[in-house]
Image 1: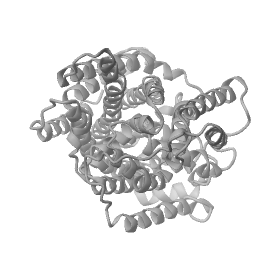
Image 2: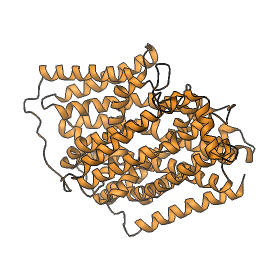
Image 3: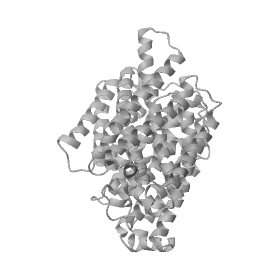
Image 4: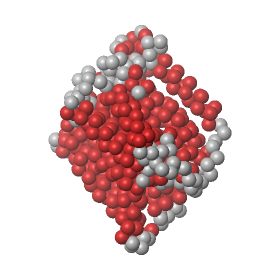
Length: 533
């Protein structure tokens, strides 16, 4: 182990933790509102940082760089098309959520459909977090951390066994942070680490290009432009991991779900002071997503020219860092990667606890007729975080055996949980008479159909196209049910806002700038740009 690298890692991570603690120490957690929503008081920079770094985690850093290395730049579409999705969510989704004063996205489903729909969706969210989200960020964090410091070699231990130790350590640290600090601590540390990731995003490509160019980063760029140019192409073909056509079908729907429905993402925005602050924060996150290509995709592109034999392609990012970076940068990037794992893990834990405490435990107490106190809810919320943490760290090591690449595994599994929920929310937004039974049947039909067509009777169609087709069919079925069994009293949105819902006047100007930047990057990494050579 390089002790200089490890010392820098400890110093940077300790500095971030202490600064975050200094910022939040005067905000005592005495209520579930302060634990889950920071009393709806976060400013736009904290909102933007929380959104961005809850999204940019080791699953994306490891997974996207792996796909660029094994395939091409088409995988960057996941991040770039997020910009369009976030702008749509900012304009149409968030005003509805803030007007109704919800704490969780299933709260909207209760208002639009009924309590049982809320319970079903809450359960789906919880299963998704325990089975997919939390284990995946812990696993990729462990892979990256082990790759950067070669801990399995230092400990003279089997690779998989070393992953177990790192995963349990990360889970323990993350759980303590979430339990003690709440969502405000998560938002503050996300913002600090968000700044750090962009510094690393500039430094790593510079040193990697310099290494490739034998000391001259200009020569490194020329090497990338001169050979293996097929990796530069962001316009994916049918044989690529992300075909270009999927950007307009399942990927668009997945991104709209993620930024507009996923509880651990939406919860960051619901903690904002008002709608204008929320929309400003989303714009900050959009600019961050564009810049994040430097960390999520460019290292994998450079690695194509430097790394030729990897036993595990998921290790491409840490392998590149160790090969090309000076010791202090290795320690710095290790701290960023470790923090990236914990911030998403913490946000997921906090949201899982929010869903269980407010949507399952509290209603159960009310049904029993028990007296409910803030202390009682806080106690259960923290206990549930510990339980979820234990489940996640137990599942995470087994992702090692996933086939066809880690990132494809994560996105494919997401389909079981994401689009069914998004479908019934969209139908709820756009209709007034579709009944609760349609929502329940839609969830069941979508989930079962996707499961059968992905496992038992696999079809030769990209899973993103399949998701889009099932989305359309499920919407039609729900509309038919709504025509046959319409609500006797059409749904009417009730205002119950806790914050101002006056929109930000400058949002449209920034939206145009962001969309133009998104399109320009697609053109740059295409046959019309540098991929033509």
